[in-house]
Image (tube, rainbow, N blue to C red; front, top):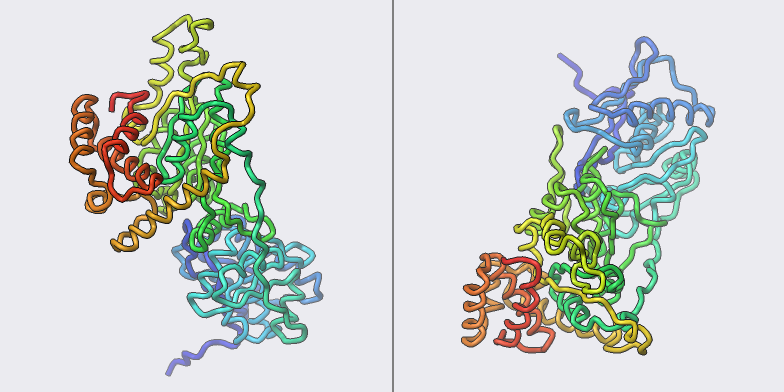
Length: 512
């Protein structure tokens, strides 16, 4: 009869492999068996994981722990799941030490571990501590990680997190010679306050569009000559948005954790603001590259994505934005995996009216007008243009206006109105048991329930749809914008003035 008992030389520990925001469970199995001396890692490891054996061997040697003259096999299960990254170093080292009898197997098997080993045995920070802690909590296990990751992982609050500065400290903790204290969450990061919107001279219509965009998360396109204030307006948008809720902050921080952007475990309640350069590649904007990392549209999740010089972006990059704008997520497809990242962002795009930027200036008339403007803005396809809820021309500011004192409402006053409008939206969606967060998310039956205008407003909307040949998407987006305008005014009913203002913000730049 066969003996199916587990060999004394076999030990297990758990870690994770990342597929988008999902932390897939991985069991690290270590067996020390008789045979020719060898150290093998199997289970679809990439180059960084395969090199872990040299880092582990050298770190243990520096601690005067000699490996036996036997065959050491590390299996990363499930074997058909690709394993990438240096965070497998710590679980491999702990599983090996448990197999050698240095560490108690029971303590090791009840943990999830991740961390990179230096040759001197110190533990180096790795990405993904936040989603790893969430996965550990779901399995009712503790998390072992480097000290630099402890404050970040502790934000999850669903599992004990023990963070050590070196492998020696982790061994002392697991053998109860020097137990570690549980890691505490990092401080809420205070981001720099953006400038006040009153600093932008003139441009009252653009300020109004920015307020509507922020209140309902409506995408905005600004077209104007150089120096008209488009970038200044966009840079002040974060100061108008309400802070992230706890759930939104955790969701956003998980993406930033995978990108390695969390500074010393600090989580911010300020909505992200991303402004990539127009030379950025498709992988940088949409996501991809080695390890299918999140792109700028996912890093802007729950926040703002500002694309200046919008027509200068490669055509393929611009067209790739169409699907994420509609669905709120992006699928990065690779030969061995399909990774999905959330990307529900507020898109603010800015463009010159033509390549030289002076199409509308009679004193600096463009020599190729109007063909120059048609060619330049023609780089923005009709279907992509149709996805902008708000479009407006930003005229140049006169010299006399630059010397005037600040005018209009301050950012704090506008932010208060936006917060009140968003509170009305949240209460309405909750009362109707709808999953939407902002008016821009409402569609289908939900849109009919919240944004059906009164008789006069509906008549005006139908006339505009017929006169300007609006697409079905454009028709519904006008209704969403009108609902937001009504929320800013504190009105429960969408009426003709709200529809009229929404139509006025849609007619610039395209026929649909």
